[in-house]
Length: 115
Image 1 (cartoon, helix red, strand yellow):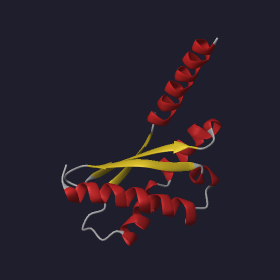
Image 2 (cartoon, rainbow, N blue to C red; image 1 turned 60 degrees about the horizontal axis):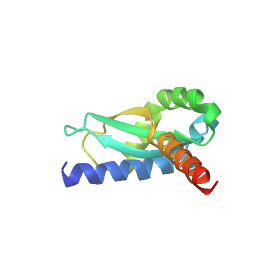
Image 3 (tube, one colour; image 1 turned 180 degrees about the vertical axis):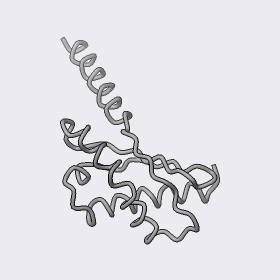
């Protein structure tokens, strides 16, 4: 992966997080936390990974992000100076839940060893 793409990935995460925190009004979108971004080499798509603070609102947050993708792309275009702003595709980040599950399993193993 080129340095330019890596820089764009980190800039997108930073700027999208800021836009969501300060410029959106939808409470379901404010429930999201951007964890990663993968921009394609031709800059046509950006796969944005997110997680939610409230697990019960996962479905509502996904729908709200899908609906606000155009607004977020426009705001991103104003903040990052590139010729073509990629289309944003939001994907739920399963790695956070996976990590929590692994942590829980390790904790159970340690509790069994102590007994």
